[in-house]
Image 1 (spheres, rainbow, N blue to C red):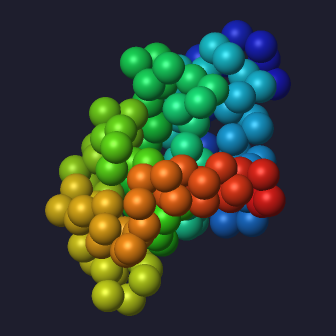
Image 2: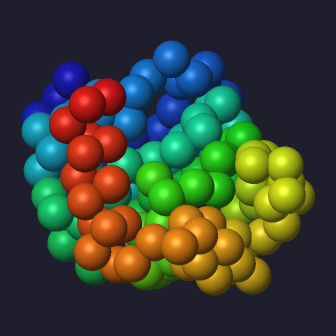
Length: 130
């Protein structure tokens, strides 16, 4: 892949078998990527990329993906400016959140009973084990 790649557009590709860790590692290894488009790619989650990328310099488009609104996606609530069309993202699971807009949920809806420190630990573990 070109080292000067600034836009990664994978719209419509089936990425359901790609782990969050693989996505994270790819984005971390391509420091010039500024825009990631994964529209309609069958993604259930997306890694927290804030530790490898300034949130002012990267934008992610995750529209029309069957997102699992769980602790792994909790970082999105903290950084909605990173997500293009944030207001359009909906949950596919768990069933009690299906069809709800992520923007309308609280962190405790997505990750019930978790403190911020516990959530950070879960997100960190998720990247090292996937």
